[in-house]
Image 1 (cartoon, protein in one colour):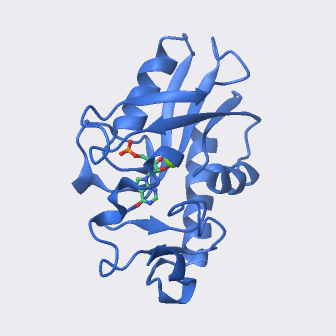
Image 2 (cartoon, rainbow, N blue to C red; image 1 turned 90 degrees about the vertical axis):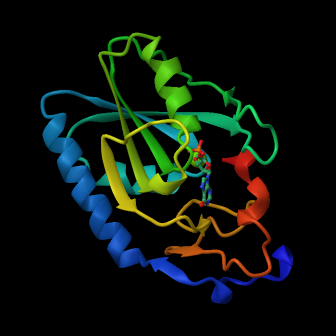
Length: 193
Ligand code: IMP
Ligand code: MG
């Protein structure tokens, strides 16, 4: 039963110290690459907001921030794997050095779609940073320019990522034990990315 699942039953995948150290490394790499320019961070709601908040505080280059929200349907719900923007950016990105900030690359559909849509708006450059990557789940070929951790095919929660809106607040990344959940959360939270 989902609602009876408590945090202490979730096995640990990445502890908060490890995440923080990696976020600092990513920020250093990004700061080197964007030296001399302003990086425009585009956070994908909701999962990426905690990652973005930590990342931006370690950047040594000037930055601006905007957010968009995506609705994605997993193959479990709609076979087309359709993705759409439910909240668009507030600011135009033409001529900006845009860095999409995403929590996790799974099938790749969301990021493939975002890269497509945003590149049509003529940014000066467009890159992607994903904290987590599950390459074994990929359906659409997408690669992050910056990647925090490669992880196995498990459903993860914490550090912004949820299961049915729960567990975003956990400082660590944990995963749902397979028993008691049927098939990988049945795509339940996919529409609330
Ligand atoms: P994709 O379009 O299949 O790559 O899915 C990306 C989105 O699905 C992410 O932005 C997450 O919001 C959500 N997602 C994928 N895998 C997980 C997971 O293991 N835990 C929580 N959310 C996930
Ligand atoms: Mg997301």
